Image (cartoon, rainbow, N blue to C red; front, side, top):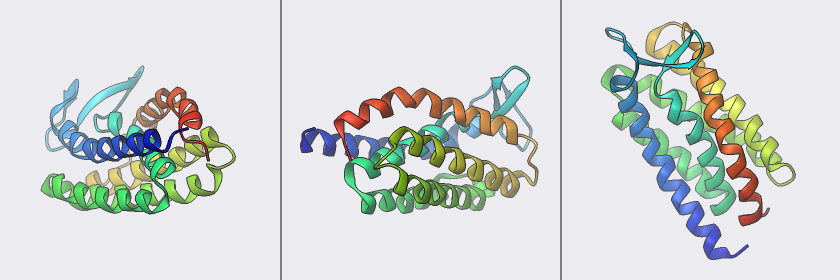
Length: 180
């Protein structure tokens, strides 16, 4: 559509993407129906399935990084990944710095590698495939490094998938606002 709309949408997505990083780190320690001693605060993501509350923002962050790349280009997509990784290590609590930074960097790079070649032809598929890979890597790396366990893996994946699923109508709209 109009270049100015595309640039504004990309800038908003960039700022929102970076804003979700400290929010996820704060939520994991303060928001949940159950907060474990020395562990994360948990939220229900499906019947009988709990996940650390940060999952509610991480799935959205993966999609927002795709929007940044779609609207502002590959360079800004990579800038978002690097800035997000730095921010993640700065705002994560001491015990979670390595887990947060490593999970963020690896998951966003995986998302980038899958999204980039697919997005020109099949935007919704690109978002779903890249986010699916990214959220799985993020979950495995974060849980293992932070807690030495994959106990909440299913909940992490389901929670992040909810966030990605909610974004799909917006991604379909994005095709009109920011065509390839």
